[in-house]
Image 1 (cartoon, rainbow, N blue to C red):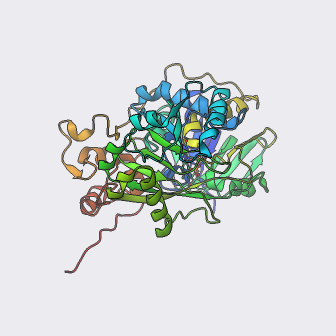
Image 2 (cartoon, rainbow, N blue to C red; image 1 turned 90 degrees about the vertical axis):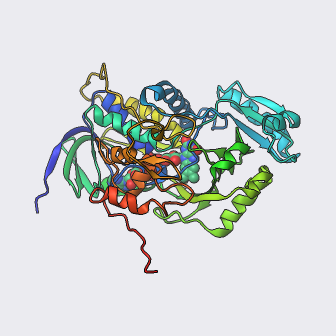
Image 3 (cartoon, helix red, strand yellow; image 1 turned 120 degrees about the vertical axis):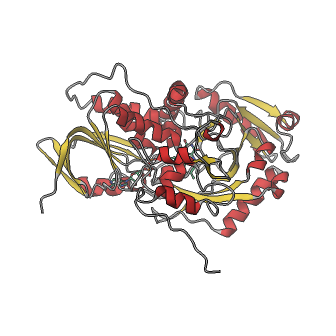
Length: 466
Ligand SMILES: Cc1cc2nc3c(=O)[nH]c(=O)nc-3n(C[C@H](O)[C@H](O)[C@H](O)COP(=O)(O)OP(=O)(O)OC[C@H]3O[C@@H](n4cnc5c(N)ncnc54)[C@H](O)[C@@H]3O)c2cc1C
C-alpha cells in the first residue's frame, strides 16, 4: 500500500525529549524547515519524563568536555530567555556536603575543579556556617562547598516552551510518528512512519533511550550502545519545603552525582536519584527497599523529614552508554547527526547542545537560510509554587485538582493550542492535575469528563460497587 508523503524538510528531528525539543527550536529560529517526529502521543515520553530538575553550573563536569561546554551554554541561554517565555527559576544554590572526615578534604579538589570549569563563585563553608544557613541539617555535617549558581527549574514547561517556539515559528511536530525505517536517496532521506513517509535533507537523531536502535534501523549499525541507568525518587509533602533552602549534594563519585535532597519548583522536597543499571528501556519501576533506603538517607541529612508524609514516588531512566561523555557525531555523507548518550545533564545542556548541533550542521554546507529576525515567543502557564498561579486570577472556572490547585481553565488550555496534551501524562506535566497528595483520587472523574475524546486513551475512572 502506498503511504502518503508529507513534504520536504531541511531537518527531521527524531525524538521529542528535551534535547529534540531544543534542537527543533534552534533550527526553526535559524530559519530551517523543521519536522519533529515523536513515537509517543506527546513529548517527554522517555528519559526527559523524570529527572531531578536541577539547572547545573557544570562545576563538577569533566573539564574540557562537550558536556561542560553544552551545560554552560545551555545554562546561559535558559537564564537569558526564561523571562520572555515565563519559565521559572528557583534560586536555591547548592551545597556539596561532607558528612565524614574522609569527604572533608575532597571539597578542596571539587572547589579547584569548579574554578577550572569557570565556576569561580564557589566557597568553602565550615560546619557552623552550614548549620546557620540550613538549621535543619543533621549536626553530623562536617563542612560544605557552596555553589551559588545551581538552581531548580520546571523540567516539563521548559522543553514544552522550546518546542512551542519552534512550532509558533513554522516547525511541524508529529506524534505517534515512530521512525521505523528509512533510506538516503540522492542526498535526501525518506523516513517511514505510521503517519506517512517524510523527506528530509538531514536527520538529527535525538531518540534518547532508543538512539542506538534508530542508528541500527537507518544506518545499519550504531556507534554507541544505550545502557539504561535507572534513578528512583521519593517526593515529600509540601510542608517539608520549610525544612530546606539549598540543594544538598553529596561528594560525587565517578558514576553518579549521588543522592540529592532538593526542593522542587512545585513546592515539594525530593530525594534521589539512585543509579541502577537495567536492560529495559521503557519500564522505570520503583521498589520498596530502595524507596525506604532513600527516605532513610533523607532523614539522615534532615532528621525532621522523618515526620514528613510522602506525596509521590517515581523513577526515570538515563540514556547512558559505554562511555561517560555525550555521543554526538556528524556524518556529512550520510546527512546524519546523532545526539546520543545525553545521560544525566540533558535538561541543563539541551539549549547548548542545540547550538552545537546547528554548528555541526553548518559544516554540511547546505543552502543558507536566514535566521528569523523577529521570532514569536510563547508565554508558558506558570506552575511554580513561588510565582502567581492561575487559581489566583479571576475567571478560572473552577478548581479541579484541589491538592495542586489546578483550574478548569488550565486544563482546557493544556488541551488546546499548537501542542495540546496527547495523553494523561502530558496533561499532568502541563498542569500538575493529579500529581498532589491524593494522586488524582478526588479529581480523576472530573478530569476524565474534561478530557473526554481529547487524549490518546480515555482516562480510566475507578468505580466501586459498594
Ligand atoms: C534520574 C535522572 C535524573 C536527572 N537529573 C537531571 C538534572 O537534575 N538536571 C539535568 O540537567 N538533567 C538531568 N537528567 C538528565 C536528563 O533528563 C536527560 O539528559 C534528558 O532527559 C535526555 O533527553 P533526550 O531528549 O536525549 O532523551 P529522551 O527524553 O529519551 O527523548 C527521546 C525521545 O525519542 C522518542 N523516540 C525514540 N525512538 C524514536 C523513533 N524511532 N521515532 C520517533 N521517536 C522516537 C522517545 O519516545 C523519546 O520521547 C536526569 C535524568 C535522570 C533519568
